[in-house]
Length: 185
Image (cartoon, rainbow, N blue to C red):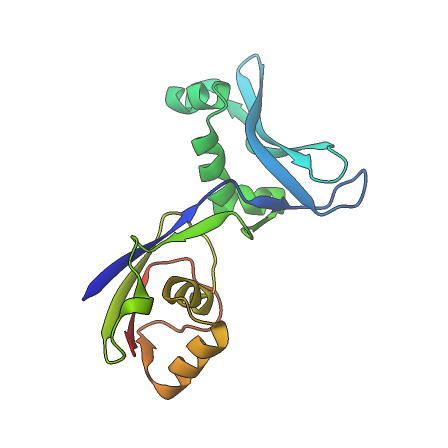
């Protein structure tokens, strides 16, 4: 029996960057943009607020670009403060590298198991699960499996060691890409 699980974002992740005002290291992006055009060039920033002092930082999205080279749809989304665009830009590796930021996904995602209940299954059941990520959220597979199956992380580790939990990907560390696993109980 194949089950489909989805790791879904619930809100924008925290932005890890040092605050120049209070030395905090967490900012919350609220999906607001600032766009500044000067003659034929345009700049655009995603605004984020310090979680401690409320100071604003600007994350560069466009820098000194010719206005005609920017797609009109992108300009409309920037002017409309599109929260989906903010989420896309935060996950863009180029934007993260340019702004020297990291993302903190703690408490910003949830696991949707489709309502399946693993606790009512027979002891001898074999469960095949396909895990899909709706966004690039780095999560430990052991944590996902423990949460989805109602097990402790130690028990999931024991199942891996016994060979009762197998996958084509390495289950230690973090993953942000789709994977499958088989659980023999």
